[in-house]
Structures are given as structure tokens and as C-alpha cells.
Length: 89
Image 1 (cartoon, rainbow, N blue to C red):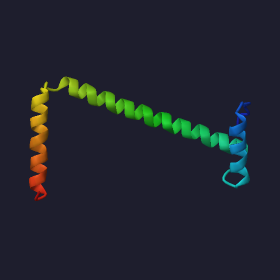
Image 2 (cartoon, one colour):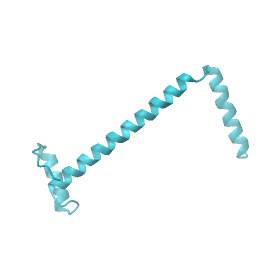
Image 3 (cartoon, rainbow, N blue to C red):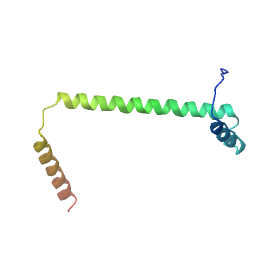
Image 4 (cartoon, helix red, strand yellow):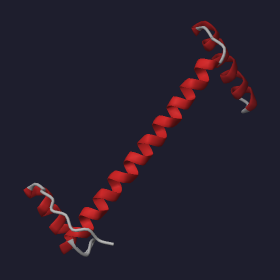
């Protein structure tokens, strides 16, 4: 189902959209606007998923044991040394 809507765009946006249609990249100005809206939707979904993943990560870390900065550095150095040995470096 299609819904008609009136939108306002800048002169530059109009020129660019018409150029895309003239070059054959899109069938119509409506197709350009529809593609733009789809890109906005997918970008927002990706951002929401990234935020949820970060929130889950921080929640998991908050529930885990506390590690001091010195201990974190030591663990990182140990991990790097082990990886270096594993790769013959």
C-alpha cells in the first residue's frame, strides 16, 4: 500500500535527487525518498542494536569481579605474551 505525503526538501536535495533519477539510479523522486527513509530506518536499527550490546556488556562487567588497573595491565601483558609465544614471536 502506498501513502501520499508532502515533504519539503532543500534546493540542493531536490537537485541531487533529480540528478539520481536522470542518471537512472532511481525510477522517480519518490523512489529516492523511499530509499533515504529505508537507510535512516536501518541506521537507527543498527544504532539501537549497538547500544543494546554495549548496555549488556557494561551490565555484565558491572556484575563481574572488580579488577584493579594494575591487575588489568598485568592480565593484558600476560595475554599479549601468550599470543606472541603462540605465534613464535
